[in-house]
Length: 159
Length: 159
DNA sequence: TTTACTGCAAAGTGTTTGCAGACTA
DNA sequence: TAGTCTGCAAACACTTTGCAGTAAA
Image (cartoon, rainbow over all chains, first blue to last red; front, side, top):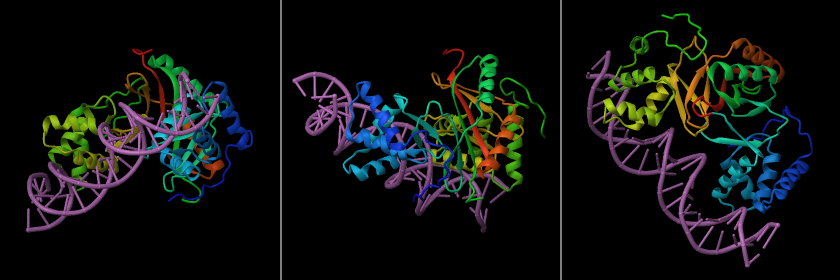
């Protein structure tokens, strides 16, 4: 069903995974939220993930440590984490949302293989898009808040 | 057949709606496909649409002329039309796909209002993205076939 | 006549809701 | 203890499948 993801390490983690998860958890704690086992497990799974993951994938992952976890909790928690700017949603046009840890200083886009559904991350020089957003703002009377830019094609293995 | 028109602003139709629908239908006919009432009605509805439409929206639309039409037919026909390069799929992250007539010489992107879900079209200078795709091809060993670029924000009415 | 196309019923998949009970702080 | 978080059951919305019947060419 799922094959081990290719380690292309396009994006390098700023800090070791554990530390990153702990930082996020600490931030939530200081905001006054409770750190439950499931919340912790989800954040760790998301930090460790090498690709954006879907809710069903995450359910499977978390269930390995907490077999009684319910899908409702997963969905609610994903909403919660997205609301708190810990996750960003991405869409690869296959009908379900995926989530990944949001690195505020690390905006990037994705290369989605249409054959094996593998997802790589890629950073794009931002001045182009910023300039574009500025001109859209003026010509279309539209206030751009965010954008989605994803590339579809064939990865090295599939081409 | 093809009129060269690269206007700024919102996309302008090259030709009257009827004519465009008839061209598409004629192309299908010469490929050997049957032109049923529902197929015809769907193409006309899609050509007339001012925004990308979802399957449920299209069902409602077509049902006005053909009350007995079934959702299964709508979904199958949308697949069929997309396979035949008459439609392109777009995704505005609200959980369902939308479709619009594909103008091969008229690639564009969308401005999605996160408040009222209104969708405007916008053309983006393509040399930037082409250059980007070229460099991705080399640096990431990834063959780019297509991309999705959508902007989210507030339209004039909602901001 | 041929077979592409259609409708119907049913099921599949991802997601959400209401509520009672459990657990963190 | 208090209020956040969780599990469960059920419902939702969009989409797909199998099959028998209809209609375009």
